[in-house]
Image (cartoon, rainbow, N blue to C red; front, side):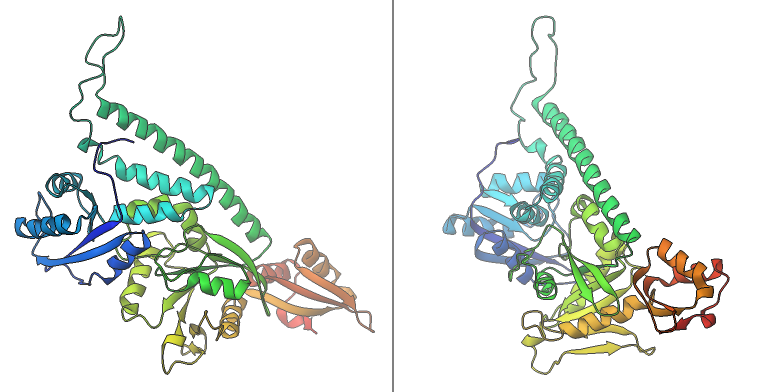
Length: 429
């Protein structure tokens, strides 16, 4: 649409370079999965090591010649780099390789574009794509002269590049305005849930950790789940009944990944608010993944970036069916509080333990009791009804009002103070 370049194709050559000055080192396995998830057919994975990227080609001339030979021999249509390339590096590489060159950010954006289903998800992906594209317009249109005006409008005019940049800016502003409206609607829904005192529990975790499978198993939903990266993109909310707590809202969100592009995090800020404003996070971990500790660290990093690092978190070690010795269980801290649950979402093992752990963690901040009130406590009864905290009422044989109440603990204590009563003065049934 905006620039002239070789067409993209499915036959792909993958490039992964290790840099010695980086604090972390990882192999190309995850990048191969990303490429396959995008629909590519990897015919070769080129690896190497450097002290630092080359300013012109990112890689050295020797490695570039090696890639060129593979591209020609395999008739590859796209070369994928497991790194962030500058626009000039992409342009220089394409001029030598004579095929499409895409970096890690562009590949992830392509996957997101394939997976977006909802109106909001499509807007978020388009915003991220346009922001990414705006830095790469210089590669096209360099051969065009300035546009010529009509009679009375002669002059240098606008270059085609300037026109495209202006159109991009206008489109980005329009999308941001529409996303802002969607975000306001989400905020209103969250406030509504907050007023009705329905806790929100959000699933977070590394991509392909099994979040959607767990979501479906727990709620009976039919969210798309597959053994591939970024199978879920659009957020899904469902109600889930938990003993001692009642109904909660469970939110399934997009998975995180190493080197998740910053512009994607910004574009999906409204969606990720489901996590930052949740009452509890379920950090889903692939227990059978040899890189699980590194993956958990990357998820924690993204949670900090979106302002969700202070939200109470329960680790959920999933896929224990792939381990020989693991059994469904709850791990507790020194105070006896759950901090980790082991389960298998695919087989359904440990789902009841997960609900038990959720109930224990959420009930700390929720007063959920059956009260027996005498006639003298009429003011307290009226205030509980006024607050919408009474779930049911009956009268026993002595004429006492038996109320099932549920409300935040702090609200209950405030009501008692206004009624000039203490907890010791209230009888529970």
